[in-house]
Amino acid sequence: MTLLHYISVGIGFAGVAIIVWGVILMLFRLIRLEFTRIRKKSIFQERETIRHQLGSYLLLGLEFLIAADIINTITHPTLNEMAVLGSIVVIRSVISYFLDKERAEFDSRTEEKASETKDTVAV
Image (cartoon, rainbow, N blue to C red):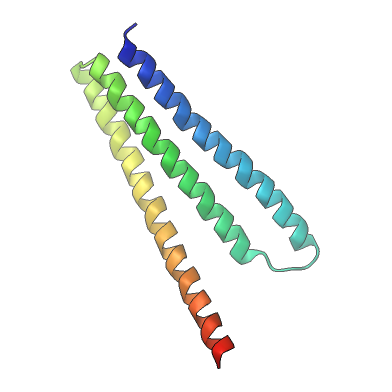
């Protein structure tokens, strides 16, 4: 095994660890939030925030996994490996694009609501 293979495995492990860490954190936040819902409080905005924060962990983890796949392909540059890598990169890039787009839309809606709140308070 070459040094690049070990680097690839390490980066891939880091990507998986980031995703798992994000899921664990957001799961605990969601459980706490659901107890708030039981007390008849609206949690829609907070649940959307948690969902988008989880999406950011997923995006970061996917970027690490893409980097690991690229490095791994360098160690085995067969046509088949390149085709598999290309497919993985396209699929992960499409997922990343849509998650990032949804997150940006959420951020703009959140900023609009914050702006409306400031305007209402100022009046």
